[in-house]
Image (cartoon, rainbow, N blue to C red):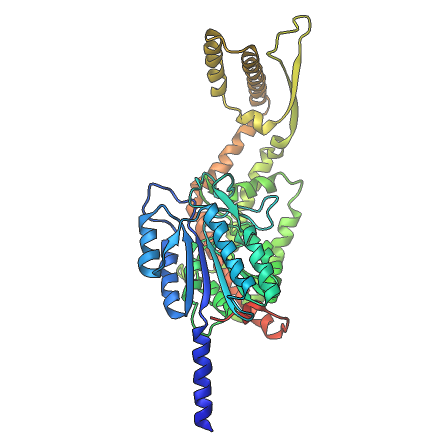
Length: 482
């Protein structure tokens, strides 16, 4: 009898392993074309190792322009692949949808779809957020638009079909602002993101997650281990019932202190400081910080003083308080410099360049903020005045010449008002010095954001594991097993 049970067990193990996990890997868009490598290469190496640990049937549409990246896919992941263009993205999603609806992936079967590319913020009409394709040219890491972009919305049909046909679906969005993709979660779909909807994503979590993809592990457990072990300024999320609760409870509290500046194209802290400086008061900010300290104190009562594993045993609570103080100093200085005045809108009036009606002077009126007046560039006037000489000489149409004259009149009016403001309110010009501190202290700010992220991960993990013991709700993230 025992021998029969052993044979039966081995039979089921064989059947289980024979049902290969279907994996679709897409991304790598938006990278500089002059390079052979991409920022996604290290994660691809880790994915290749994960693939050898599980029985996976992998399809890849990734990058397309970088030789080293291509070699990793072909020689280590060992699959042929297409470039990550909009057309190939659409085709691969369509073919994957057919697998679900046709029963090629049976009821109870599993499918994992991975997006690892540059990602933008959520903007209408997207339910999720924009992502960069292989032919994208990025100038801003927050906004990804134009012909070289698409969105994670395209995966919605897979989530809906998986729910309808009883397929277990995992969507891993490893891009920036990927917290937006949790909107795709349903009773059969677990979504994991490398960060929240307001933050950049980083390769450290992606690599750590691939390292946790092991036979027998659930997606939820792999996520928790990778989240605690990785080190960056992101806020990884999961769509499990407890995960949603943790996001609601902790994300907004930690958000301001995970902001930092990489460069002018990847800068979250400057826009945040500007936003807060425009507010009538900062009571909500201070109230939220008090709530955050309550969370930290609650954690330390159980786990002891939180120290950094990565940066010389630094006291993480002290780093949080120090970063808040640094931000507060900038906000105080902006308040003294009357920064809110910059958002005040004035109405300017200037002559139209259209001189058809010589008996009547026609003026154009326009609203413009004081901040835009002070930032208005002088060089535009020189360019247009030189341009007008050429247009007149080469006998451009009257309408083109009139439009140029109108633009010149506008610029002269704005620059005149600019000089008046500089004399009457010179303190407004000092606000630029406050923001220049962010650039000067970018390394310091990034270091603090990293340690605060480490603190957030410790608190998140402790609370998550406590709550998951009590939460008995259906959980597709636990049900999905490698």
